[in-house]
Length: 628
Image (cartoon, rainbow, N blue to C red):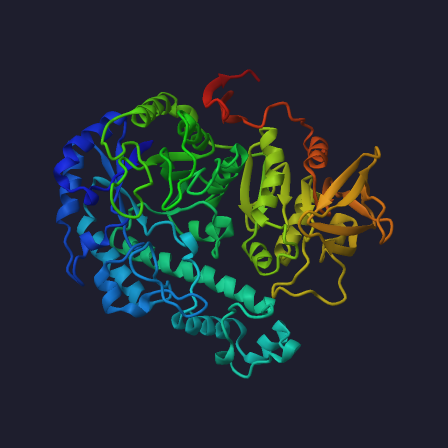
């Protein structure tokens, strides 16, 4: 198990390295992560590579018995690259190029930038291919962070047109599938298709979905090209990328990307600049379970927060032992190696307010000793944390569906990740271990599968879902399940939910979207009144049993929550985003478990009759040995 810190010797010079590495070793570390923003150190002039500095760093690591995670630093470019090739910079919708001096700023579709990135990757790989101190490689850093997964430059437009040609073959096919006869938008040539920039009115949803798919392909092509370049030189290397928080809201599919690497990392920041308070424990848990789902395996955390973070506005301070609680939560949920960000905060540059274990006074204080105690605790109990994780439930993420809601939210109150989180919370509150998966993953190992707001379902997944329920599985579907075809359009002459009316035992007969601060009443079998938000689908029963109906509905007598027996299993349908009291009552029935803990308490099953208990309010934890 690797435990370490992110270390930036290029920001300080080598004068402090012996003192630093001695302190890092005494901290309990066996690895450091270096060079993720050091391109100008490796290539100070074009095609002139200089490895002297980091060679010395690695030699020092040998003295202190510290392994190295080596980063290929393409997330920030040297000034000479920007000056010589200004066309590599990304552009916004209005044609404005990104300025130099911040993080990223480049276009992933720039052939020049990709060529330079691959040249650096190859040069570093060749130089360090026999270096045993390097045990893992990281490519780039937090791809797509801070809006950098979107660009509207000429490179992107040209390659988008090529993508459309390859997919549709001829322009008549595209016009037919996109319905371009609407608003007189028929195209004569692929080259006439514009990028979906902001206009007075909404753009064609088929165009916009293809643009989201193209952005995903763009990100994949960039990083996979780097991966293949490095693996060609060092075939037996372990190569990963580090993903940031909020990946389910990005313009790329983190699951698809992660499964093209040897390993994956997640950067765990439950609080950052501008937040009044940290994410809630269940929200952090959801992100960690998602990270485990990226590759259906355990994962690294390459940046674990311990000091307050922010560029211009700083997030709330991290209380004593709060950072350790988050770290242990991560190990309980699949982390296999952790590096804290960062060993020492930098006293210059844009991240001066991103504090480390040491601050600008360079003194070992509370945070240093807290991590030291934490690492000791993890080492003493590593056998428990190394156990495999077995989930009973799964939640299915779908990039296309998430993209559809970026394009057409339908309600100004709708947020895909927040709505997923509401359902996840019900499992978390019952300490039910949950995997976050995608529609190509196996469903059969789970007792319960939740499919939130999958507005676009592929035929193969629909068949797999029906087989799962037929064989005894339980599934929860939500409003807006299977409404659209693969072009983001409705289908004529078909009931909603598309091709699922037999599984659900209902037909969506009418619907409305509810805007902020509006709701509709519903009533359960005991005549308790509850509220439904965001969407109101009015369900006509064909074979299902009604659990909740819409109350005083002016459209007629319609169901709001139903359950349908299908083969040996059951399918629940939730036609709205219901208030928490009702959802809790429903999950009591579905799971057979009631909530018996507080919202700030967490029990994580580590296997072998051992549970990790974390009190996220008082920042205490305990390994509990339980009997069967």
